[in-house]
Image (tube, rainbow, N blue to C red; front, side):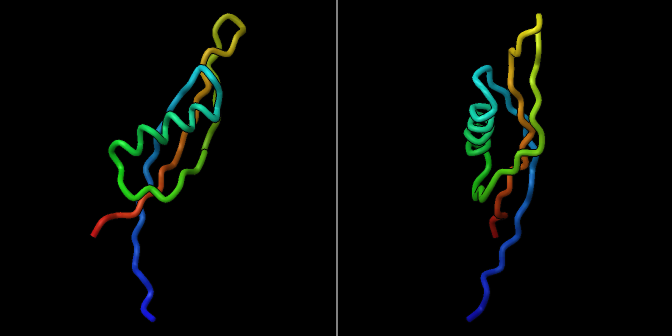
Length: 71
């Protein structure tokens, strides 16, 4: 039985949300699906927050988006 050959690519995106890290991940993933096909996974590389006047105003994530290249 022959193995199926696949080649993947990784691209980084940064997304943010005022609700929390989980929502920031969902926002980034939703946006990635609009332009990338064949997404097989995400890797959260970094978590950050933006602070103003001693309050967290935005949760930010840096994501690696993994997707299979089309033939």
